[in-house]
Image (cartoon, helix red, strand yellow):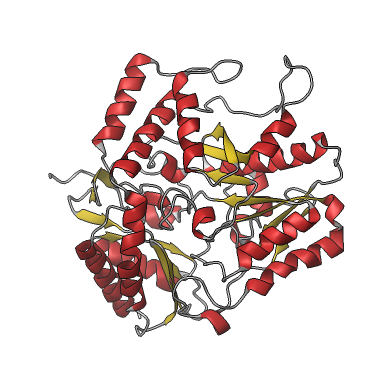
Length: 440
């Protein structure tokens, strides 16, 4: 492929979650994508080691998805979702609940993980109010949690840099302790042995605030954006038990875990814990068209279905909820997942992938390696006075050598499309190994 000239003026675009001045001095532009590879603006093939942004689970450039979207836009480009509907949104909802854990059987559409989180939080608050427990207004997140960038999401989220510039955020929010425990769990394979007792931190918050004031707890089954924190054995089950004991809704943020990343449809399946609400996005359309969805238990949906039938039950929604193009992309994506058995493929590759990750444990500055399913993280010791810089240099070096990775803080995250093969896994970790050595 011929080299693509970098645009002359990069200044107008204020880029998200990016060091804008640094990027614009040496831009990294992607101009094409197919299967496991991006094409860079200078004509190089770059192995995608992070599924775009945790979302391209079925690989890039899938004809089935692009053809479905093309057919839909030629037939109907947009349909209002308030007091109107279109067939694909109902078909998709039925397909999605077939994948969901038993008891979760309704889907509410939005356009991103951030919107899914804010939607789920509003559902939880309204649910208790309708049931006559309007005092339950408090929301509980977790330190180091990431739940998108809406005001609800950053309020219950626990990543300091995502919160500190934006004032007091929502009132009535508290946080559980995170589960990262290097002293006891470094270099764990899969779920760490230690830390189930950290779920009891919820009992501390119940004692502090009283259960009658707490609406919901929201956690990621695997905390992704903070650096792939795997839940300790028994932790999520204990959290479920405590929520049940006190009448608190449990929300799983499945935006990253969902659609095969853990080797099953959802993290809830892998860890055998069913929440009351699940937020999803990313892999729902393979990243092809923005979409998010909240999955809800029947009890929650039925609670809203009261009062005169002509009245709106839930005063919430988005202009693009259940957008026809997103539904077409999602249905095609689900077909690919099923036809190619990609969730099973992820499960079968997970041991090979995990061994490749843990083979890096003796490299310079590596202080932890974590893995579960088809996601892993390599944590590096920070340079004195220069936090995040070592991981950033590893990220850049790997990109220069043809592999795209994610970095967060001083952690490298790896979450490739589920179509990756063993040879590509070998190449990915060989490049990462070289990048860690050369940036020591």
